[in-house]
Amino acid sequence: MPSTANHPVSQPHRDDLPLAHQLDAAQLDNIKAHLDLVLLALEALVGLGSDAMLRAAEDLNLTEVVADRVALWRLRQSSPLRKGQGRKRMDVEEARSLVLIVCHLAKQHQELIRRAVALLEQLTEQGRAPHEAALLGDYLDNFTNTYEERMDETELAKPEQLTQLALKLLIDLLFYSAPHGSRRLWLALLDRAR
Image (cartoon, rainbow, N blue to C red):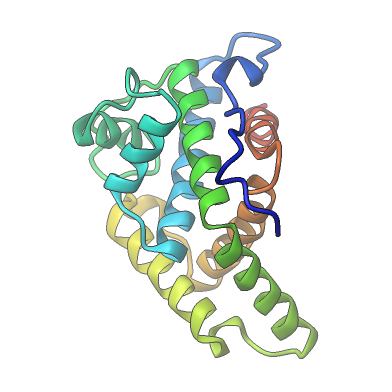
């Protein structure tokens, strides 16, 4: 794989994420919830925390939206799935910024995401459970534990549903880590918001 270390790569920008019409509050809630789940999946797989997200915001010149841990926490807490929602509103620019951050982080960890998805495909072909591979087992355990810790009790799903959600999000991360991943994620969010 060729290195891009010496070649500047143009970063995606919020303006690259189109919006054909204004979003209503329910649509923004759907977007907030899904973005938080995608970030949760990335956290569960990679073990990254708020420092990595803040560095990504800095790399992408998005510090006016995600300036510090408190701003990041407020954005994450805006998800309607979260316990004790701290801030109920997220605007379109904040959603776009989080999309860029998610995809930036997914690109940074693309090799691990690819390895996890390849393992999932291999185990599925063999008719084996994903938990049989340490990488996937750890990911699923981290995802489930974090979901149960952070999400509202009324939103808690059954263990099988959480496993399916985690695996779907893992596969989605592979697409979001690819070129034009931010556009893919943004369009998926808009589609889910309808």
